[in-house]
Length: 193
Image (tube, rainbow, N blue to C red; front, top):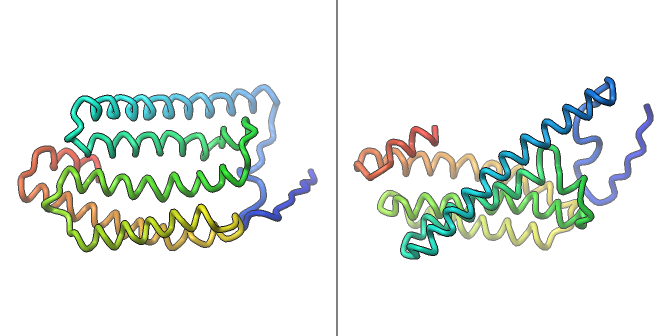
């Protein structure tokens, strides 16, 4: 088997998955199963996004509901960009746009999730950490929009390190919320772990 792969526009190239050898019917069935499973998860999370957006429209003072809705919408879009890469393979959407969306759904979903946590447990968050993170996260999102695809990959490792630190910060907020006996904090912490 000879592959001719051109990679002039992106730092990470080559085949997306390992090669499989087998009967066409079996391989097609496996691909269809994986795609169906991803669409099920996509649909479930997208319905959660719509449901929480409608809840927000009914009670606009509950900003946490809006942020959770946006978070679910971003994750549902990300499902179509990763895994079986449905949008890359089955649409005519510009490839560079899809790569940018792939990065943005990761970067923005973390920002929105932090906003969600802060709205749920405002007394437990640390304002200076929030400001620093939102500034850094916004800069990364702007970089994704303006950088060439060859440079996008270079933003990933630093943002993954930031994500780990933010994950620890969210854990801190949740622990503090449990200690302060905030409504729903124990269940949220259990789900987070």
